[in-house]
Image (cartoon, rainbow, N blue to C red; front, top):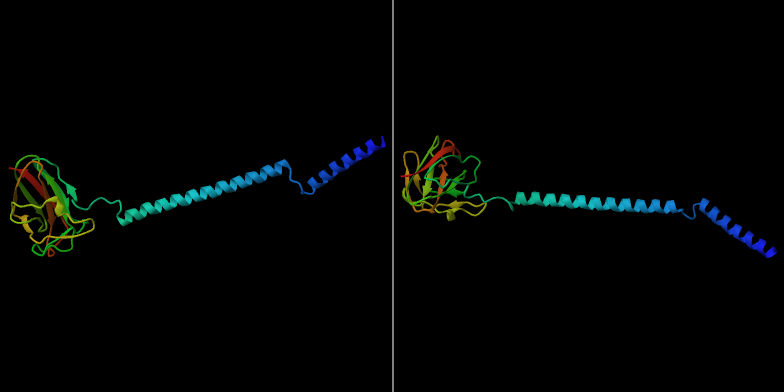
Length: 209
């Protein structure tokens, strides 16, 4: 009996010692452990969110850089495409357009240009006219029956020098182009450097005869 009492007292002593250790903070409770784990999980989530935010910002900066660098920009030439119809009336402007072409003969220097692509809908002769408040004209590689092809366009960001250019249409001068169905003519519109307004609005017409 004495031995049993001693054993019971020993067990009570051990339990009391464990309770004292818990009260002193030496052994965290189950709730304490869960709180620590939750805090660690929250911190990991915050770090992951921060990394995702940084990645999104980097992607946005990359897209902005691509636009600034011209990586995704549309080609500058042709500047517009005319309807493939027998009769076309087009109101255009060279204001704020890129400087695509220069010509010593036509005295075209650094100013905005238009390069309009026209595709003939059928075989025939097409009269091209231009009118404006400035001395604007349409360039071609020769007389009023010649025209430039689309491959005359400069590369993106570049400027092409027209060495053999003449006016095929201007104030009081009309072009007469013999085109077959599907032929493409690049109608280059600009003004000499001495124009009162080198960049201006104009009206261009194409009419099958």
